[in-house]
Length: 153
Image (tube, rainbow, N blue to C red; front, top):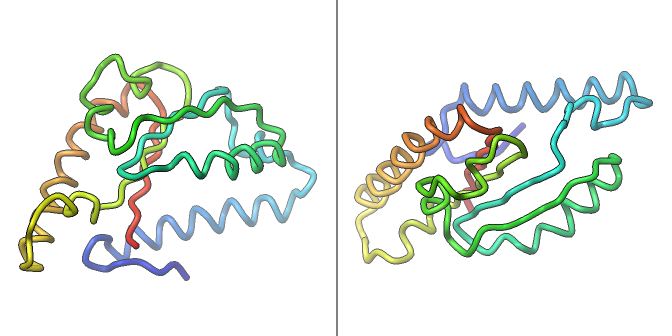
C-alpha cells in the first residue's frame, strides 16, 4: 500500500502506479534470471536529473543500482532548483532525443520563497505551479523519455 497526500494525488493514479510497480516485481520474481535491463528495455546510456532541490546526493544510489542490474549509465544533474528553466530552455538536455530525463519536484519548494499563511492559497499556488509544469511537459514528452516524480515530504 502506497502512502500519499490525497490533496495532491487521486486514488486512481496511486492505484495505477502501485499496480504497475507490482507487475514489475511479479515479472522479476517469476523470471529471476532475467536481467533487469531487459525488463526495462533501456536503449540509452544517459540519465539527466533536474529537481527543485539539491539532488546530487542520489547519484551514488543510482550508480549502485545501475551496476547491480548491469546497466551502464551516465548520470548528469541540472543546477539547483532549475526544473522550469530546463523545461523552457530548448538547449537543455531534457530536449535531446535520446536518454532518460528525471524531474524530481517537491511542491513545498514552490512555497518557500512566498509568504503565504492561508492553506487554501498555498494549495492554489501549488496547483498553478503544477499546471505550468504539466503544460510545458506536454511539449517535451514528444521529444524524449521523461519520468516525473512528485515528492511530498
